[in-house]
Amino acid sequence: MSASLIITRASNDLAERCEPHRWLIEEVLVSPEAAQQKIPKLIVPAYFHPLTHPREWASLVQQAPHIELVVLNPESGPGSQCDPAFTDALAPLSAAGVAVAGYVDTNYGHRPPAEVLADIGLYQDCMA
Image (cartoon, rainbow, N blue to C red; front, side, top):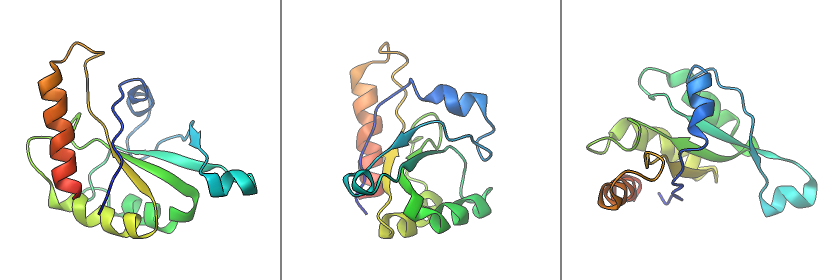
C-alpha cells in the first residue's frame, strides 16, 4: 500500500472542534479527473480507531468514490509502533484509489526535526 504524507498542524483544529467520528467536512480537494467533471472530493480526518469505530471505517470504504484523501492520526502522530488495525482498515481504501496521509505534530514548528522525521519514517514503514 502506498501513501502520501502530509505534515500539518493547521487542519487539526477541525478534529478538535468535532467528535472524531462525527466530523463536518469543511475542506475539499479536487483531483484532476474530478476537476474536469466539476465534482469535488472530500478530505476526511479519520482520527478514530478502526477497532472502536468499525462502522465509520466501513462507511469510508462505501464512500470511497467521493473521497480524495483520508488523514490518519492514531496518537497525535503515528504513535510508537505500527497498528495492524489501521493497516487492515486502509487496504480497501487504498484499493479504491483513496490517498492516505499521516498527521505529524510539529508543535507549530517547535518540535525537533529529528522527531518529526522519525514520525514520517514510521508512517512510511507502516504503510509500505
